[in-house]
Image: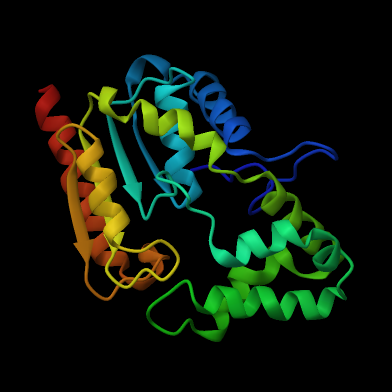
Length: 226
C-alpha cells in the first residue's frame, strides 16, 4: 500500500499540486521501483484512488493483472458539492481559523460512512487535517482534483482487457450507487457488486464484505493465470 501524494503520512513539496495525473505517474514509477512492472499486479483503488489506478494503467501504461475499483471517482462530474464549493471560495476556506476548519472536516467525514464512526476512528481520519498545516494540505488537494484528469481515462475504458471488479456501497452519499453500475457497464467484462449497508468509505463500514469481494477477484485472476 502507498499513501497518495499529500495524503496520510505523505508530504508533497511546496508548490507541487497533487493532481490525479501526478498521482498516476507516481504509481507507475512506484511499480517500477518495487520491481513489479513485469509481475502485472492487481491494482486496487478507492475514491480518487480508483481514478489514479485506471489512469496509471490506461494512460501511463502501468501493467496490471486485474483492477479493483471501490466507490471510484472516474465518471464525471465526480466532485462533491462540498469540494466544488471549496474550489469556488478557496480564499474563504484558506483564511478560516484552523479550529473551525477542523470542525468542518470532522462533519464531512461523518457523512462518509453509513454506520456512525467511533470517536477513535473519526479522530484517526481527521488527524492529518488538523491545524494550519493540515488545513493547507487539505485545500491544496481540493484545488488539484479535477474530472479533467479522468476524462481521458473515461474515453479509454472500453480498452480495459483485464479482470475488473467495481465494488460500491449501497448507501454511498458521496458518489451515488448508480454510478458504480454505469462504470462497470463501460468496462468490458467488469463485475459489479453492490454492498448493502456500506457508505462511501466501504472498507470502514463493511470490512469483511469488502475483503471477501476483493479476494474473490484476486483468486479469479490467479486461477486465470494457472
